[in-house]
Each structure stands twice: as C-alpha cells, then as structure tokens.
Image (cartoon, rainbow, N blue to C red):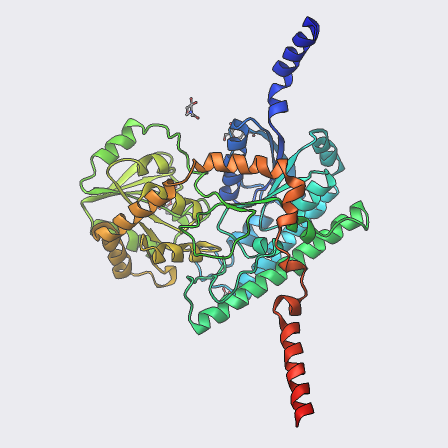
Length: 511
Ligand SMILES: *[C@@H]1O[C@H](CO)[C@@H](O)[C@H](O)[C@H]1NC(C)=O
Ligand SMILES: *[C@@H]1O[C@H](CO)[C@@H](O)[C@H](O)[C@H]1NC(C)=O
Ligand SMILES: *[C@@H]1O[C@H](CO)[C@@H](O)[C@H](O)[C@H]1NC(C)=O
Ligand SMILES: *[C@@H]1O[C@H](CO)[C@@H](O)[C@H](O)[C@H]1NC(C)=O
C-alpha cells in the first residue's frame, strides 16, 4: 500500500467516517401530540449521539403541535394537506379532557373512527408526495422507524426500499402491534390500552375489555390499514405489499415500558421493553427562584400538571376551586401548579405557586420533592417511578385509565375519578400518598428495580437497533407463525372437530 492510498483512506475516513460507522435512520413522527413528538425526538437524539445519521420526519397531522422534540437530529417537517385545526378539534373536544370519556360510547367510537380517517387522508398526501419521496430516497436509509397506532409509514419505508423496520410504541403496548407479530393478547387477562382495567377483571370488565379490543382492532384493520394499503396500491402499483404484512416483518419493536412495571402480557423475542430512555438523565440545575421555593417548603413539594393537552385553565371552575381549597388543608406542603395563561411564576396562596412551565425532572430530584398530581400520561408515570416517588392520578383520556390502574395495582399511587371529584376524595387521596409511608416505600422499590438492568437501557436500545439492522434478513425466520394459521388451526378447533367426529362415528359403529 503506498502513502497516497493511506492518505486518501484517512481523508475519506475524516470526511465520511461517521457515515461509515453509523447507519442512516429515518424516524417518521406524526405530530399527533406533544408527548408523541417528544418521544420520537428523544429517540432521534439518542441514536444521533450513538453515531447514526438520523432524519426526523415530522408529518403535520396537527400543525398546532409546534415542537420537534429533538436537539441533535436533522428535522424535516412536511405538510399533510390537512385543515389546521382538524386533528386537535377531533381528538381533544367532544368529549374534552375533563368530560365523560368512557370507552365504547357513541362519541368515543366516532372519535376513533374520525382519527382513523385523518390518518387515511394524511396517508393519501404522503403516498402522493413525489418530491418528498425523491428527497428521502437520496439519503439511502438503512433503518426506518414508526409508531404503533398507524401503519401508513410502512408503505413509505417500502417505497424507499428500507429493509430494516423498527416499530415504536411511545405508550405501553396496544394489541395491534403484538397481533401483527403473531402474539395474541387474551382479553381475559390483558387489559386493553384504552380500557380502565387491571389484569384482574370481573365478568363485566372482561366483556367491555373484549369489546374495546374488537372495536379498536376492527377500526384499525378494516378502516385505516386496509384503506392505506389500497392507497399505496393505487399510487405505486397493484403488487404493493399489504401494510399488515409489512408491519409483521418488523425486525424490532421498541416498547416504551418495563416488564416489571406494566401488567404481564405475552411477548415475542423481537419486542424490546426499553422504557426509561426518554427520561432526561443530564438534568440542568434549578434556577435560584425554583431552588428557594423547594428549599423553603416545610414538609415537602408537590407538583401538579395535567400535561400539554388538558390545560389547568380549561378545568371546570368547580374542580379548580376544590383543588385549591384542598391545598389549603395542607399548609405544610408547597404546591406547584402548571397554569397556562401566566408568564412568570406567581404565588397565589401561602403554599401555592402557579407557573406556565414546571421544571419537572429537576424538581423531582430535589430532596424536598414528595409527590405528583397528574393525568396518568405514561411518560410522567415513568419519570415519577424512576425517581421513586408516589402519585395521585386523575385519568383523562386514551391510555390514562389503564396507566393509572398499573400505578394503583403496584400501590405507588391513588386514582381519583374526574366525574366524581369531591373535596373529600381528593383530600383523602392526597393525605394517603403524602402521609402513608407505604406509597413512597413501594415507589422506591420500583425505582430500584427499574434501575437494576444489565446495562443502561439507552445502551441496550442502541445495540438492539444495530442488531436488527445487521441481521435483518434472519430475524424474520424466528417470528411466531401464529398469525399465518387459520382461525380453526390456531384454536385447535380442526383437531377437536376431528376428535368429536371420530368419537361420534365410533359410537355409531359400536351401537
Ligand atoms: C427543533 O427544536 C429545537 C428546540 O426546541 C430548535 O432549537 C430547533 O431549531 C428545531 N429544529 C427545527 C429544524 O425546527
Ligand atoms: C356526543 O356528541 C354530540 C355532538 O356530536 C353531542 O351533542 C352530545 O352531547 C355528545 N354526547 C355525549 C354523551 O357526550
Ligand atoms: C449535559 O448538558 C450540558 C448542557 O446542557 C452539555 O454541555 C453536556 O455535554 C451534556 N452532557 C451529556 C453527557 O450529554
Ligand atoms: C387566566 O385564566 C384565569 C381563569 O380562566 C383568569 O381568571 C385569569 O384572569 C387569567 N389570567 C390572565 C393573565 O389572563
């Protein structure tokens, strides 16, 4: 080898080194809500830091969600030709967060259907966006990633010839993801993501759980997924594969949950429980103002936030008034409340502060921090348990009800019902969580378990993404074959029918 070759080699490595070592990853992130965007952005940042070249494609489902969630990835935002307020008004009104949102009611079922229709319309725009496809094709992506609730982007990955598909769940798992991978979630003991049950259900609970599973599955399979497959076949040709088959071929599912925390459910070997990677370990410091608020609280600090969608200012007056009157019953605790229409932090009672933004992770690490009052969003629950602190949860919509059941069953928090919200109930829940040491002790036990992993979860995730790419053609061979069986084969109904028939025939012959 002569000197020129060596020099050229070094120059090449310096210029393209990172690209040679890392992979090119496309993360498809519909702007469904701030929490989904934030999840995808954090994943993009983690993979970028691990040396990959990551493009975060924000599909504008809800143009009002303005954040991109990422600090390090290349961000692309693309219009889906949807009306500006269509997604937000469909998802977050009628019923709104503080109204009755029991599943299987007419309005909630209609809402699921309409959200499916938004996904279909967005898919139409995506499949026909030739300019976007041309731009993306130039990146020659190795890996494509998308979330569990809509499978349109599987068509995008196919159109871009991306071989390695990683399927994400920003929440706990919804049945359609394991279903596609050949894992059935029995309605008898696996609570649906959108149902308010734990893993121990009464007869009627199981009836509703089964109903929720069937309704959501039918809407997903035959409303959105089938239509989206049709869209790609119309645009790209009749031989375009079925989106269900494409999703079934995912090499890896990254689940934002932990086995020790969630209700046990059947799994397959390509589902990785990687919950916790979204929690910001590199915390910045508290400002002097926040530090002094926390330091000066007598018995401890309690945070209250219902997330980006359910604003405290939109809360019914009656509920707001109950909350503040209950806070007055706990004068030794300091309450910090997320309140959207103020610009600074305002002290409104001797022990209550309102603020438009709570530095949640940082305050949770203060030694005076005691508990969280929240809507049971999955990322807040993970943050609180990582920190080893208990919760009072008021589930509002979507997966909140099931998430809260996890917390209740692990005895790390108490659920309060938004439709039966009284002074006594809220006050009792708060007192129990603050003054019965069992909740804090349990939360600390869970925190220890969540931290007790063979390697940091970030490292595990990055490794498994690489593994999925390196062995992408082999992993499929280990997939469960359940999905490919006929209904009667899967249930052994063919076998029992045969036995029954033989028995009858034998009986007939002998008689
Ligand atoms: C993404 O968000 C970050 C911080 O919120 C911001 O600094 C950055 O400019 C945004 N990137 C794009 C491409 O909008
Ligand atoms: C369902 O939605 C309709 C409007 O489409 C509304 O008038 C009605 O009050 C809602 N029903 C319930 C039970 O929320
Ligand atoms: C932590 O954050 C600071 C600034 O916010 C940054 O300078 C530093 O590199 C970060 N450390 C890690 C390990 O990411
Ligand atoms: C914020 O909203 C509350 C309740 O809706 C109202 O009483 C208050 O005046 C508002 N404050 C500002 C600064 O708009």
